[in-house]
Length: 115
Image 1: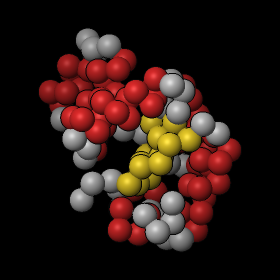
Image 2: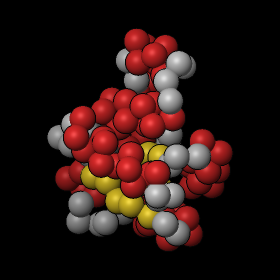
Image 3: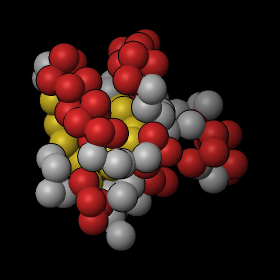
Image 4: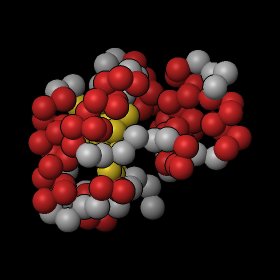
């Protein structure tokens, strides 16, 4: 199943929603944060004890390729690795370019009713 995603411009609102997801039984391993700024992504993920799309979610070939890729290419690859189509990844990457942060939940059956 395709992950559920929600876009945010307000980090505080995102963190509130992550807390609510956890309170409703969504496991930490199913919650991911992604933004165009690695520091912002890491800071938010750390504050809410969520995941970032890292080595364990990616194919090793893509990890190596990302070392030499532009930021946008790397983000699109990460989005595809977690379950989005190439077209969806391009659209979400454009949103990231605009400064938005993505909350991605890989347990969509439960998360869709909560977000």
